[in-house]
Amino acid sequence: MSNTLIPLEFVKSKSSLNWGDCLWAYQRELLTWKDLIQVALGHVKNGSNNGLEIELANVCKENVWKVPELTQALAEQGRNSEEACKRKWLFLCLAWAYENRE
Image: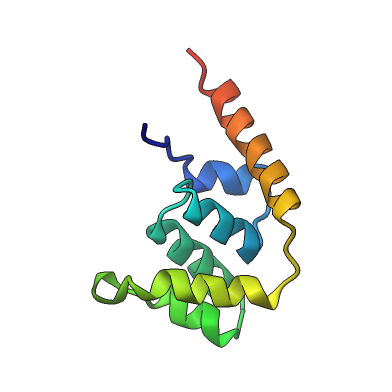
């Protein structure tokens, strides 16, 4: 069984994501490594000077292996609840399914 990816733009239109949310979704293949880089790029473009976000924003295909460890480190900087991540992603998955029903 393969997961259906929810486009990052849809996710951002429905909810704000913290790094704990991003890590949780990445570990469950709801977001890709490219999505995580896009989130970091957005933060940097909005003025973030967090070194880990800057490093993640600059990851390229040759060093994509850094994405999980950088995202983990970013998630550890914040307060993240497993239950809150589950609830947020349940909402996002249901919203995506509802809006894309046939």
